Image: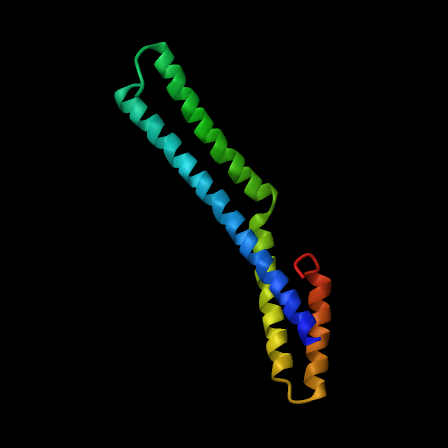
Length: 132
């Protein structure tokens, strides 16, 4: 049983790592593209188009700002739609509970403690099946 709990813990920790990486990537992409759009729009408003002059330069500048803004919007929307933050919270909670169960079983002094930990493990399997 201890080996099964440790395998579940490993799977949950892998899920946490993947979700954390994805969540961070989405946030960073959204932030960087938002900042770039804001800086480009602001500097263009202050000094005019940065590449060339006349209507074509304005079109290019506005198009680039639109691409940055759209990218930021898409990644922010994906992060919300895919509920990455919520999944990360659940996976982290699952890993914490599994660590606690593993600790309890490893340090159990009697069968009653082990049985209680096994019941806790069954509950974790029910609630967090997508992470274990």
